[in-house]
Image (cartoon, rainbow, N blue to C red; front, side, top):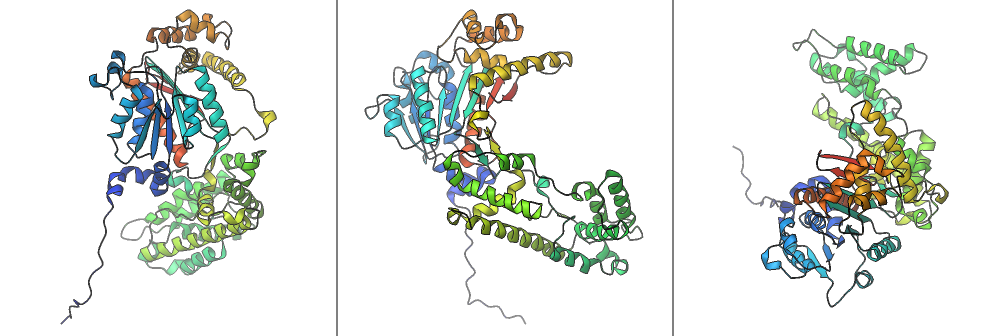
Length: 537
């Protein structure tokens, strides 16, 4: 009879905390590290004009739990605000708009702190920027006073603070991100299928030994064992046979890979009860994708080639790791192994063994990179976890707002705008002939013409646009955009403002958490045709 042991108390199982339950969905997106970055963020909103799009942006940051926000808005609530701003009601009439909005936004998330300005502590924007803790990011809405814009640009340059400009009028809107120099993203969250690197053409001794042990008597394996060989083992076995008959070379051309795939396909057993083998089907399907020497990704090549002339960049942990990975690549002609293994038909214990082999190699590669990092100046201060994350995502590292680091290669924003205008107008000629969507740049140009005035006539807008695009009043698309912006008279539609605010908040979260890839650098929205376009302006 089995003896029941009652002297030991089973361990207490702790469920998720209240915060984990509250933020469960977003923690699945950016994990605890991203949430911690969000909760330490300090956001400033400089609200002007109708002010709806800025508040909608802030709403979508308060709900996921930013640490603190401040609103600078020197207007009072009017009847017009009640028609377009969800957060204002009759009780707010005649009161400070920033104070009313702050109080109502804080009701959405008690864990968030908020402040409103101007008040007795800071009566001007300049005073607020001088006395407040450094802001993580700043959002400002158009139309905005020129002196306010200059003060924000100076602050962003001094403190390396990302600036988000947002303009919404009628059915149209755009937002533009100004980043403080090149902005690297390591944790880009690529699709899991894209991260597969089985290293079949450059297997290391442990993987070779594992595959040979499993296939040394492959012809005499029973149906169960043969049908549960991992596809990695199958491919390594037949690649080894291919090399013996092809002078030591692997299949490289499409014709050779097709022939190799046929060899693998013909090796599958059909006399088993299933009439085929799923693991061999997986191996056949994986030939074209995995029997390759992975090239250096274009995004990482751009990172390697980026010229750093700013001393702060030279000393940053990211660039020290970049130099180490570049040395690793020069030595081994491949990147550090990510270590992930895709799901495949195999016995559980065998699959776990295979996973451990890949993980062990990934740790070995990351360890080698870490040694290079620690051998450099300032490298001792770098967290090994940071090196491991870079090695795991090396093929997908992205550099946003990269200008090459060389000041001679940079062009002014006005010159870039003129260049993009010429390209977009030329592209539109071809797009019309092919019945493709036209550029949304005219919307941006029309909105930009009202950056510092609440509203303007069609002629005034066209006169401003003509400074960038000579003969703008002769271009139908620009005239049409100018008419629409003039018709809006600076008014916002709440649904357009809400959608735009959601997009801005999404991009801000990417930059605050340094996860996923933000736009580079302007997004234009056409609410009439429900279409967006991203341009670098």
